[in-house]
Image (tube, rainbow, N blue to C red):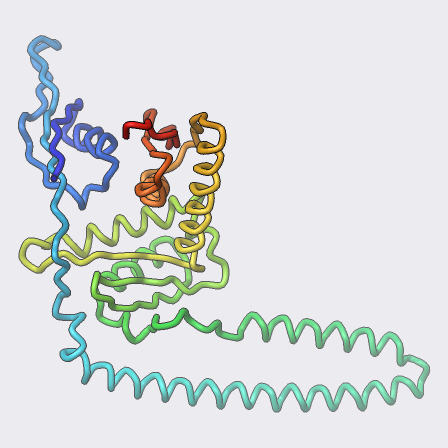
Amino acid sequence: MARTIDATGRSIDEAIFNGLKELEISIDEVEIDIIQQESKGILGIGAKPAIVRLTEREPEDVVLPEYLNPENQRRERSERREKRERRDRRDRRERTESAEAAEGDAEAAQEGAAEAAEAGEEKPRRERRDRRRKGERERSDRREPKEPPEGFTEEAAEGVPAAEFLKGLLRHMNVEGTVLAKAEDEGIRLYIDKSTMGMLIGHRGETLDAMQYLTSLAVNRNRKQEGYTRVSIDTEGYREKREETLARLARKIAGQVKATGRSRTLEPMNPYERRVLHATLQNHPYVATRSEGEEPNRRVVIYLKDKAE
């Protein structure tokens, strides 16, 4: 059953924010009705707070926009595939030429080393050559492209509004990265392929969550006319690894609560992490969960169920 609450604040935005905190859901999961606009009154007399009504949106049947329909993209994908094959052939040719040049340099270095040995300078020459080769290997390793996650491709990201918005967001952040995409029944999944991705994750995924929130807002501005598209953004497999870590933590603490009978209050977590804990233990036969406190210090409490319950 959908939940409905009335929330207040000094402004409409503040009232919406307070309501979302209480429901522990994001703005794209509610319908918003403005009950009362804020009023400052005269010299503070007659001031009125803003009041909004937030109604939790029923789960929607996800509607894939036309640009995600495989039949409509067949011709475009064929053209993109040809471009990518030409680019791959060019890259392989350039790598072959670089390898041949490096082989020539190595042969020249070996000849120079032999001459230096005759002059009594073999050891310093060999050390310099080893350092140079080590540097060449390190540069080569950095240039070697990483294999993208299974099913994620640049081709699938071309022309997709969510991917294009994310590319623009990365440009404004002065971050160089490749946006890959994978269309699924529940929506579009995006993956940022970059050599150093810690800055895109942030503390406990806060930066990644913010990027996903902004992208979802941009894509679903006209969802009532065009359908709702669920957007997911990940990098370095962070979300999957984080969910596995939280699920293990939840099961471990649940075992401790069952054994001791004492409740455990975990450290403060964001709404996404709290939902993972709640979902992991929602069908547990002996323990239950609840959230306590105010943001940003809201915590999950794991406690022993009553016998009657």
